[in-house]
Length: 179
Image (cartoon, rainbow, N blue to C red; front, side, top):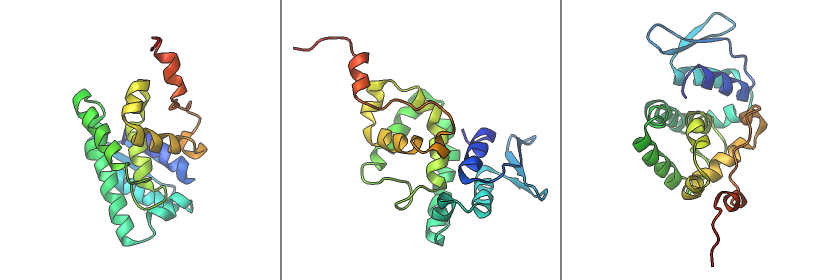
């Protein structure tokens, strides 16, 4: 979901007016800001939102050129691989496995704080994670930990129901008895 809805959610997270966001005739997401400045492309729009924002997430995303470059790469990863891959059953399994492996040793995509990279991937995989069974979530514990941590923040959750990641839920789901 690297589209109009994702841009609107990320703008809300950053506390920035969305402006007019739409798909152009080539199906590229565009944003017209309050100054009638047109910006095209998901990554470019997120960069412009970060420049306009005074939020901690925006500041974390632009703290240095190295961090900016890494954030840019993860956003491109979200656009080119995560968003389309989350719609394909076979690709999505590998995608989730790769992300789960990444989060073995990391809490966030870049550095030690939430950045635009985390937001872009979070919204790109939201529907995929929402469709996972409790057993699937158990198979991706590191990814589940990261996702659950992000969804607990009200500015990221934005009124969506919290997805259940507790293992107690598994007891209700698995109805068999074990001896």
